[in-house]
Image: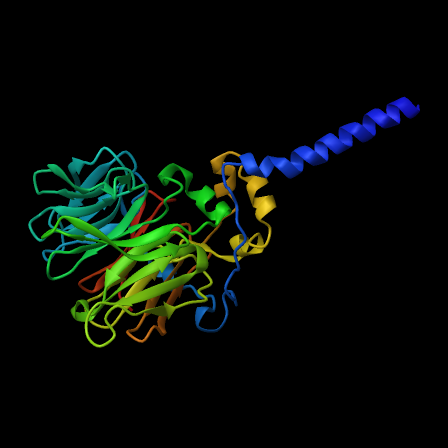
Amino acid sequence: MKHLLRILLGALVVAIALIWALPQWAPAQAVHWVAPNNSGLTGVFAPNQSLSALSLIPVGAAPEHVACDSNQMLFTSIDGGQVLFRRAADGNWSTLGNTGGRPLGLRSDGSGGLFIADAIKGLLRMDATGQVTTIADSIDGQALKFVDDLDIDDRGRIYFSDASQRFDYSQVALDFFEGSQTGRLLRFDPATQDIQIMISDLFFANGVTLGPNDDYVLVNETGLGRVHRLWLRGERAGQQELFIDELPGTPDNIRFDGVDTFWIAMPSLRASLDDIAPWPRLRALLSFLPIHLLEAAAEPASFIIGVNLQGEVTHNLQDQGNAFHYITGVTPCGDTLYLGSLRTDAIGVLPIP
């Protein structure tokens, strides 16, 4: 009996030692981080059914984001690298080209083509014939791991996000479980062919948009539910500040309407991520699970907001019971908002409130 107890005690000690040591070999080398205040869906973020008025444009696969040009031609992209366009006149989708990666952020080049933030291939340009040119896929000899979104100033310089230096597009959940905050806002200058780091240490750098007159650039920090502003011109040039923070959702893409509103898509709510922030060892152990199980921890939402030039919420559009959810992009085009999603096979369409 004593011999059995010794064996059981030894096994228990070994098990405890393994559990203690396992995190050092975990896919996510989780670190401690502090979640900003999160009041949830209250106040200016109170629940409503504004998105119940959505109509849909079928795509046939999940469209992560939407772009439009001056002729209101729509562009979108789907998994597998395909970039699609749709003329308003006929309403049918056609293939513009294929990046061979995963195109995410899209911007019209004004000539029937696109500038593309491709999570796998890097910063690209696809012309009106579908020909793809690589603009940048590395910085200082290191491959860009997760190019996410972009915008272009009046000098042709491209501001773009590199979401993570640790994990690629197929491992998004691991970046959140690790919390090491390696995302960056970068700028490519076509005149010098150089890439400059504008902001670093972001917890999953995501949507990028320039403000009025290119005076500043905004970048979404998804993991901490906030948006940063970097001033580019004037007396405050070079200064960085929080534009809006303590968002209850995880800001994904952001787009300026050219007048007075920034539209922000929030595909999921922050609560489940915030709950495990103080537990790095637990997050490390959980990261051994398959990616699809880690992704299941997210709380999908049907949620977009409009923010004015002062960083104040002016539009709160929700419908948490809507089947069109996990909204990753919201693009103003004319008098219409076009919504992308990674969980549906259509684009959402809504008149601008």
